[in-house]
Image (cartoon, rainbow, N blue to C red):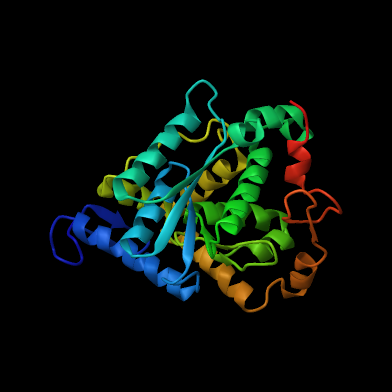
Amino acid sequence: MKCRKCGGKAAFNMRQHKLALCKEHYLEWIPAQTERFIEKYRMFTHDEKILVAVSGGKDSLSLWDILWKLGYHADGLYLALGIDEGIGYSDESRRLCEEFASKRGLTLHVVDVLGDYGHTIPDLARSTHRGKDKPCSVCGLVKRHEMNRIARDFGYDVLATGHNLDDEAAVLFGNTLRWDGEYLLRQGPVLPAAPGLARKAKPLCRFCEREMAAYALLSGIEYIYDECPFAVGSTSIYYKELLNDLEHERPGAKLSFYLSFLEAKKKGLFAEQREETTAGLNVCQQCGQPTSALDLCSFCRMMGVGV
């Protein structure tokens, strides 16, 4: 197969786009498309400070690499969650993030949950009702709180995450199965800032997982290949597998599903719920972040639980 741009040997073929590119032109195409999506969805500008949440995986490190190459002021944030389970998962992902930043002369903020709060994610899960099954809900709560805290405390304009099309389509599929209007309303390439909450953006939301894996490999980015040990058997992975089967038979199905949703939302889908989901928030008396509770947010209540 030949590269559409130069006629040389193609390094990667994207069936959904009917586009094959060589290594050189693929590594040009991904950043160019990312810039186009940033502008299309008005995610942020070159004058703003961006905090990139990095996990050591292909998507987040590739996003940071792309924004760096595009000339954005982008710093990284790594959350050391203490997820090891005998394989050193957190230690290895932290090493990869630190080496990535060091090689490029970039700033990386590190939050050590054990060092800063005295707990690891598995410990917190075992000590609260949230940990009856897997610690994923505890992990999500901690990440949301700490990402927003660092963005706020260090004066960043926007928090960027490496969610790709597979992630977005799987979440959309699950929310649609449940017709969860509140979550459907919040899903999109950009979540605007609100009092006490940073703006959030997903510049990779239109790239599938295979495309980002190819970018990381062709760019020489070293990343952690293993999934989080607690993610094995999760509902989101099951949804991704279902959508991958559909994509195999119908190339472009995932992108069409996601873009059709965005278009329907733009036309007013769930508009009647907009005020309900943004009203009634209070300020946590401990950390100052928004909460629906009257005194302490879920994060601060959880951190007060003895382990």
